[in-house]
Image (tube, rainbow, N blue to C red; front, side, top):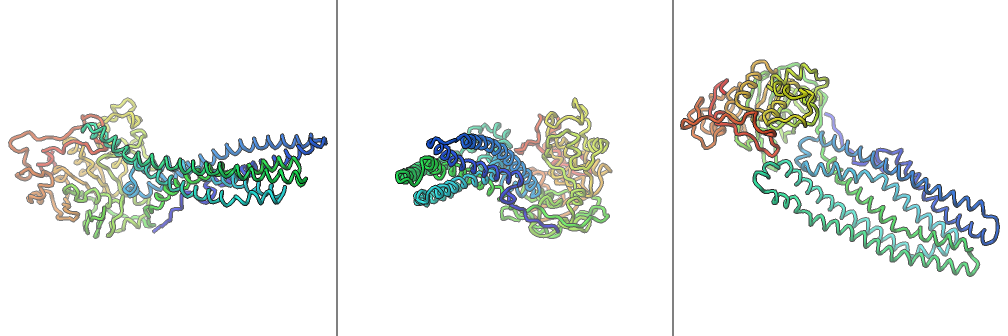
Length: 612
């Protein structure tokens, strides 16, 4: 089995664009070096002018240094922007790929809103880390070089500055520590707000129907005071550091200039050297620049830490085995899956013979969808194993596993391409004929052809009901093919006539291989070769729907609180059975907030193969 330990968000000190980042370091350092040479050149020029000696060459030197500083500053800006953009893009690609490799576990831990906040905002902040390090190196080189220059002019000047240097060092250390804490807290609260907003957007129809817009707005914005407190604390920390540096730096500068004046009076330094010393004192006390660079680096490090939390989630591991020839026999051996410390699936043993259809039924919370996810390795069981034609799924290669198992869901994700691309999603080279054949099997071909651009219509431009969306998801699964087809309540938004036709196609040559159906309607269960009845995370019984129907608790799975007579019973009291919502419902019938059509009384109270 292949294993991998995900590297941290930043691949080393220089980031992914190591050449550009190294060039940025060199350009920044060269700019700092030119800035350090300029005071010495100005001092020498002043001394020559006061001595009435030729100074034209030194004036040119000064002009060249000023021009060089301007050019290097421009190059630093361009390189810094390029390095930041490339690093941000690299981080977003890496984080997106890792989240997809981890699968649903990433969303379950962090939430989609928080993941988006990390992917968008935190990745952009973390992307500034390499350029911030380069800028910080140059910002540190300035004061260090200025102190060395003061020492070359006179050791007394360097000694005066170094006497106050420990105070500046302590100030910068405290600032870096406090800033990191504030920024981390600020980013965490931002993530919580993004998560709450994502939940509200997903449930916007329920919120509007309940008339709770104001309440939801208040819930989303509830962390704002905490966010404001963290933001104000950041400003206070930075303001305090800047204020303290403003108080200390002028004293050091004044001390250097005063000592330089004394040395000038004793003819130990020249007027030009006094000018240079005053400029070097300013450079040596450039705490304001350091404060800004440290703040930027602290934000980048805090954001990188949030990205590393996501990257610490281990991705799904795959083996090296290939599937042998077989009919698609699915077997679950002692499968246990925990959620929130509770065993949603508890020691499940189940066998689905190759080429047959098994319906999985049970009350809400019985573990049906989790069993469907485990059956195709969309999630891992905490114990036990799942085998396909005798091979444990975890030992299969990624390509073999995904080629062999197809899925259709209650609310299929249509990702934004054309309808033909969506139906052929995941296929290496989907042919138009294969896509259209799958669409006809899913009874999606008619409404797709009615669209102005047919199969070339963009998903965003295709108005569709919940049932039509489900049919596109079914078409995608049918086009995928494979040995195992898992339908996780993928027929729930269809009217009973369409459901009957698709079920007939499933059972009579429309698809091949083994079929596992999560079913909420009795009609769906009645058409399967066998039914697995889940109760409390365990398989209570496996058998034909007609056989299980005699158990009152089994009937209660489909019609809680309704007294039923048995298979084939219509609506009670002579009422007209509800056939469920058809595909002519308003667009968006498969709402992400869970709004969907009623299963229908007929679907709950009938049985027998082929009933509708």
